[in-house]
Length: 311
Image (cartoon, rainbow, N blue to C red):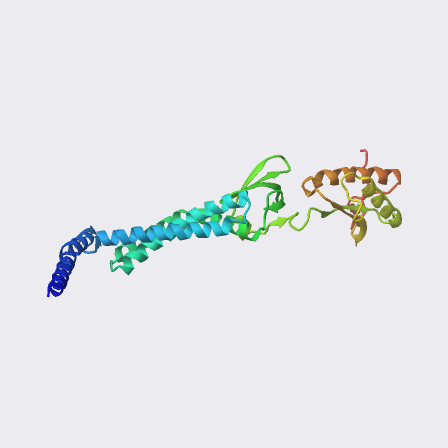
């Protein structure tokens, strides 16, 4: 009997504790979580509670942990330079993810976010129009980093200008021209314009100097002179060997081209200039004439020309 009474007493006590927890503590927590406030206008109110805010905070923390994990997985095999570039891009992506997480969490918890979506859409449209060029440049920078189409040290030609790249940023790329001037190129040009990368596959490039000689010149001698000049010119590689092409029978000249290889295309104008001086000197020494356009005018008068009298 005593044991049964004790069991009943314990059971009644447990039920009372359960009732207290359900009625008092849990109800207090529910009241606290359901404590709400309103945002927006009377026509389009946004009803938020403490519970909604806690869900947003938890989702925010989870998103932060996941983003950090993703960032560490991607950057663990990158060098320091590429890691810094990626982190700059990742900051921009992180803000977009946070906005999406907040909106999704509120929507999933039953909050009408129509007003927020409308405001966000209007905000993003306005920002998109105002920052269109900026976003295009950033996307161009991302493509450059991902597909490795450009690298520091590459010699490129864009819009008729040649430069050696010394810095690639998220929005712009900087190059040094042959005149020792810094050219700043917005990155969208590298995805929308034609760009010549002289050194992407290898540092060696083929160049040429064109020259015309008079009709009747000894073409074998011309070929010999051009090859000798190229062989003696500093900066021209011995291998692959230079070669000469007889390119055209032009109106007033026989056109030749001496083709050669160099390993510094950034300084090729100086090499070409010195080679032209050498060719001109050897042509003069060997009596090879470089012609210039001439025009013969034949005059056929319809009436005899009378000499003017002295009177």
